[in-house]
Structures are given as C-alpha cells and as structure tokens.
Image (cartoon, rainbow, N blue to C red):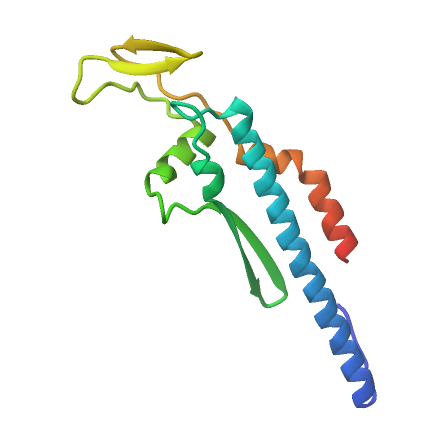
Length: 154
C-alpha cells in the first residue's frame, strides 16, 4: 500500500504533474514497443518465412496495426490484423500464424495450380498450410527491447 501526504496546493499540483508525466511516458513507450513489434513482424513476413501464394503482395504486412487503450491505472496495447479494407486477409493472417491442418481441394477444377520454387505445379490436393508464425516470432524477437523500453519509461 502506498500512502501520500500532501500539504498545500503547490505540492498537490507538483505530485499530479509527475503522475501525468509518468503516464505520458508509459503511453509513448507502449506506442513505440507496438510499432517495433509490427515492424519486426513485417520483416518476418517479407523474409519468405511467410510467403504469399504468388509472391509477396505486402497486404498482410500493411494490415498489421495496434491500438492503445487507457483505463484506470492501466495501459494496454493490442496488436492486430486490421482486415477492414481487405476482409480476406483475416483468414490468411490466421492460417499463416497458426497453420491450416486440413487438406485443400479445388472447388471448380480437377487440380490446384501451385507455384513452388518458381515452378508451376498441378496437384489434386494439398496437405494444408504449415505454421509460419510471424507475429509471435516478432514478440519473442523483441521481448528484451520491449522490456528496455518500459524500464527506460519508468
């Protein structure tokens, strides 16, 4: 438990100013940490660790966003895929992060046309999509940096 004793208006205004300053530093730290994680995730996507079906279009990397919410004594940063402008990226983002274990079959054709290592391949079905984490990997890669950002802010 923390007790604070203030005498007079001057001490109260100084104390409240310090609280507001610390709160603003934490807000800036949360924003900086979120931007760095998104930047690292975009690099993970671009590194061919998470390839698009016909080469990278950049849609998934551009759809990464963050939102900072302030509540009573808390600052929360949520990193998410903003799929409002391209709804199909929602499913694609999830499948890249966690994989798609089901077989994929064509709906209106006899075979799927795939591009593998620059070659065109036809197949009646595929095993699914392997897990290619880009956001969880970015959080793990930036964990120490995030801790340093908040340590410096406090």
